[in-house]
Length: 106
Image (cartoon, rainbow, N blue to C red; front, side, top):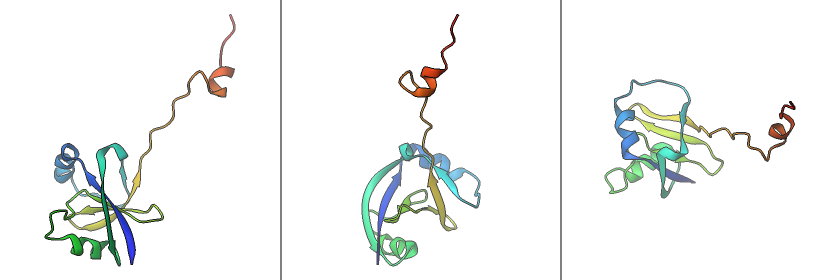
């Protein structure tokens, strides 16, 4: 049995997700659009869905299950599909070597 961390999609994002056209393939998701919601122990993602079905904390469309190794699966109408976190790029600040070396002398 595996332990899955549950990430609930925030309501304002879920509304647009529900009505977006279905696309297949890896879904890119932003951590800011999700909230941690505990864990579930199950044999696989479909078993996790079945275990939570009918309960107050049932998985909904857009919710994500994360395995111990960091793999993500998003719950869609057609089942579960692979997902990946989209992390914002770090902006170069004045403390970074690239910014320090890019100054132009007049």
